[in-house]
Image (cartoon, rainbow, N blue to C red; front, side):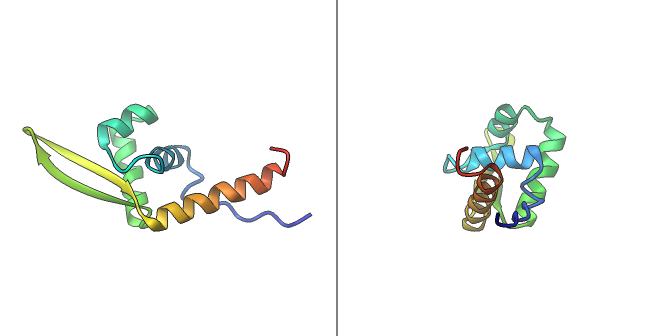
Length: 98
C-alpha cells in the first residue's frame, strides 16, 4: 500500500472546495452566483475568496456596474493544478474501486 499524500489544507475547507468546484467548470463567476451555489453567507464567502486569492488559486476583479459593486472570480492555472492534485489525492484515499 502506498502512503497517502497530504491533502491541500487550503482546499480541504468545505466552502473553499465548493468555490473551486464551481469555478473549475465556468470561465468566471460573480460573487452572487458563488453565494447562491455554495449557500454561504456573504461575509464567510468573502473571507474564503480572499484566502484563495492570496494563495494564487483564483483571480478576483472588482468593478462597479449598474449602480452596485461587482466581484468576478476565475480560477487560475495554479488553481486548476492544485484542484486536480487534490482530486487525485482523494481518489488515492478512496482506492481504485471508487
